[in-house]
Length: 402
Image 1 (tube, rainbow, N blue to C red):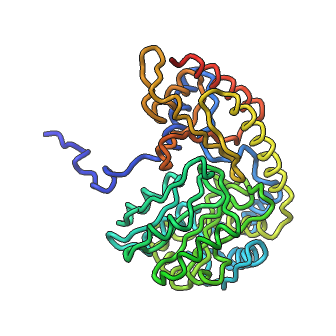
Image 2: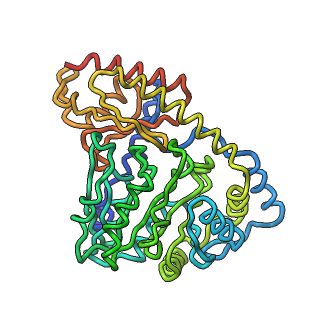
């Protein structure tokens, strides 16, 4: 008698959605493996190498024997560097015991959800949101409460929306700025207004995902945790993947209230323990070093953003705004819904992205995965030549829709 292995799987995993960004990237790889020339603009990964001085620091750490287990919340020297970074760059004051280093900011978010949420607790999530927020909240037993804004508002929610979404079940508010997938950046004044509507709700904390902090074109990054009314209830999440081109190093961190940090370390101790020893040594060097390589990356991304906006503005049916950070554009393509290609109707953003993959050989990600069903996410973490070619292909493909 054969056993249906699917029946052995938990309801938890059966109800969980696959990461749309990872899924689309794999579809692009599969098409490439068949011999097609595919330009993948689907992953949130800088196309730059890790700066040389950071790699050299990792090599030196290996030579010095940093190959053993680390303290679960991170090496003291890295946590001290993070304390300095928060003070220097964000105006945030933490003790070393309020810092937890994880295997990527994604694990930091998961630690927080597992540490803070009981079954049925609510999390107010600003939409469009990063794909994994909602699934991680649900895995932890929480209920995501989505508060959304469209392209006409630069995808930024209002304080009034936030206030209306908070209930007695709300545990925390979660958002990113600069935002993945939209590139939107909340100003200091906008964050102050949001902080002021959250402040009266003493049970409500804030989780501020600032992983794209260094890829901010406004000239000044603002952290909501710097607001006096919520500073003791804000957990600031960051990492090394985006600003230092260290995606494969898997290093993230958080700063927050002591008891919450301890709870996150407790959970991490049972799942993965500490992050890699030599990676942490290099990360400490990254935070304490000159940021010129990071600023050069930011300048390159800004130049690419301007190019992509110029080119996409000429593509019929693509409505774009002016993203102020990260390395994404998030055009509204709903004008193409209901059109057909060779008899196949494009019903939604999912269909549109599959159409682009097969007809233009360009991989983008449906906005449905980010809580914005009218949009698609296009990453400009690619060369200018690739971006020009990709958008030319997109324009040619949509011209065939009827």
